[in-house]
Length: 246
Length: 226
Image 1 (cartoon, one colour):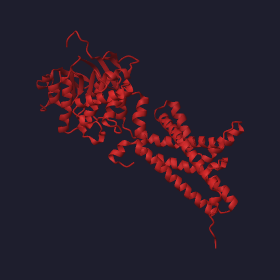
Image 2: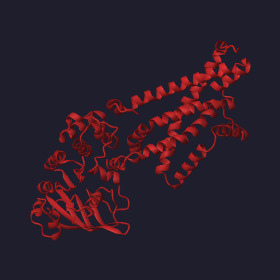
Image 3: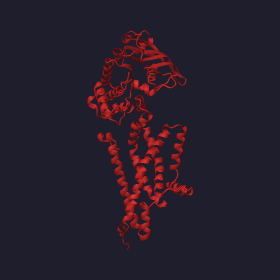
Image 4: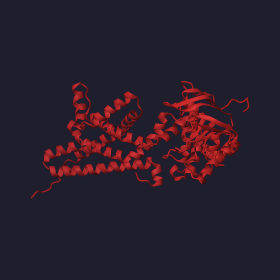
C-alpha cells in the first residue's frame, strides 16, 4: 500500500460483541483507494459483521474504524452522510418490489440528492448499462431472474456514486449460471477502478479479482495476502478451509 | 291484502336526495383523514417511543371497545355541556375519523409488518431518511397488501353513518325515519333505504377499487388480483 494515499477504510483493533459473545476480536485491516478486498472464512467467522460495520449497520464496542474520512467510533457519526459514500449490496437483493427497475435505481438520487427527473432517467440508463440491463428499465423486480435482480441492486447502489462498494455474499442465493453474470458485473466494476470489499464464498473469484484476500477465523484476521495465497496457505485453518476447493 | 304504496318516493324525493348526499358527504370527508390518522397511529405503535406506543395503544383499544354511538354522543352532547358546540355534521365526521382511524391503525400495522426488514435496511443504506422510507417504500406496499381490508372498513364506516340521525344529522336513515313517521309505510320505506345503502356501498367499493387500479401500476401490469 503506498504511503502517499490515505486508506479508504482502516480498521484498528476493532472489537464487537453481541451480548457476551465477542464476534470480532481485534480486527486490523486497511483498504486503499481502487483496491478490491475479499473477505473469506467460515460462517460465523465474523466476515459479514466486519463488512456491515463499514457502513454502520453494526456498531462496535472498542477500537477504531475510519471509512472515507468518517470516524465510525465517534458518538455522533452521520450515517446518512457516510452511506452516500458507501454502497452496499446484500445477499437477498432487497429491491423495492412495488417500483420499476428505473424507480428502484433513481429513488435515492432523486430524494436524497435532489437529482431532477430527466437527469435521474439518464443516470438510470447509465448505471443499468454498466450491469448489462439496459432493456429492463421498465420491468418490475418480480419479472426478473435472481441474477438480474442482483444486478439491479448493484446498479441501485452505483446510482448514488459511492466511493466504496460493499458486497455481502451477493451470489449465495444464485445458481452457478446466474452467479457468473453477477460476478462478471462486479469484475467490470473492479476493472473500472471501484474500491470494494466483498464477502464471498466464491474462492476462484476471490483469487482472480481481489488485490487482497483476507481469511477470517474466529473473529480474527487469520491470514491475509494477494489472491494467490489461496494456492499456498500458511496456516492449517486456511488450508482446511480452502480444502480441495481450488 | 296489503297494498304496496311507493308514492312517498315522489313526495319525498328531495329529502331522500339530501339524505343520500349527506351520507356520501360524511363518508367522503372521513375516509382520507381516517386513513391518515390510522397510518400515523400504526407507525407510532410500531416505531414510536414508549409513550407514543402507550398512547397509541390506549387510543386504539378505547375506540375499538366502545360503541360508536357512545363516542358520537360523547362528542356531541358531552362537549355541548362543556360549552363547546360542534355542529352535527362536524361532530359526525370527527367521530367517524376517530373511530375508523383506530380500526385502520390495526389494519395498517399488519400491513407494515409484512414488509421484509431487508428492504428497510436497503432504504437506510441508500441514505433515505426514516420518513422517506416510510412514504416511498413502506406505506405504498402496506396499503397494497391490506387494501381489501381497508375497503371493507370504509364500507362499514359508510354504513355506520346511519346512526348519525341520533344527533339530528338528517342522513339517509334519518330521512327514512322521518318519511315513515309521516306515511306509516315502514316496509316500503326501509326497503328502499336498504336498496339505496346497497347501491352506495357498491359505488364506494367500485370507486375504491378504481383508485387501486390507478395507484398500484405493478398489479395492473402483472395482473395480480388484490
